[in-house]
Length: 387
Image (cartoon, rainbow, N blue to C red; front, side, top):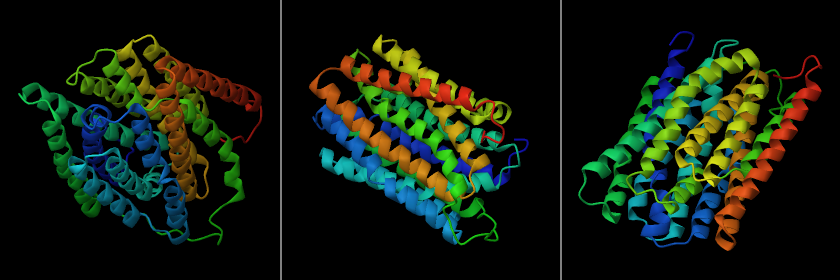
């Protein structure tokens, strides 16, 4: 595409194949844990929490190391390789503890590559066109997710056996798209050019000013329900096993449609304004799920996911000095707050009800949105405020 570097396009294809494999896992994982392994909803919460929490320190660590020693492509390739090898092993899991372990290892691979991958995209993005680059990358990312979900729909539609064996077989086949992504990153993605160091310090004081926006995003995720809970709720309200992947497709299709254009809007309007719109999408998603408007809920969920991630990644790209480290903090914060939120919501749902859990989510999401709006209005008149 115009104004998008070939390395960004290549890393987009890497994410396409990797997230194809991821969607083949995450779409079926709640059903696999709760109904196949016969574990409780609280166990699903533990798996989500452990898998996200275990990698938080590594995200910050590898972001720091990437900046300190200017290591980018090795971390990207290594992270994708770990993820490609661990997903198929879920086919041999027979307890929630083994699922939690494998999901943690897979998330560890994501932790190793995440900050370096975004630093790579940023380094090959043209000035004032960062939104387009990140929007394109996310579009490829979610296109892969959508194809992964479509593959599951296709398999369930044409298979006469819709049971544990089929689910385990799908997990095993994720090896192929996962390794395709590894192949592309090894042979078609260039490392970032070395930069002359202006300071021996990786952590720059100027980057502290970015943390209030990052903090608002972290706390929004603390209250926001995981997609795993959304899928489980869909099953509870009557969706069949073959329909559930269609919900994931609804979410990813929304992301494909909005990703590139949201990047263009971020370049024009600024990341904070677009982030505010993303929060509103998240609130609508929760409200729709509470009133059992399942399809609409997944569409708004996709809108929140893609718009918020694009806004935050571009915000860091445009304003951070130590990009690798700040991206590491960003992904580390996502891991910590998402993990704690998943654990809290799982416990509330298990001990009380779904409605208590979703009202907890809604209250927190609305509060954070109001705080961000107030901060934007308060700082609007100040000059030199980061975008």
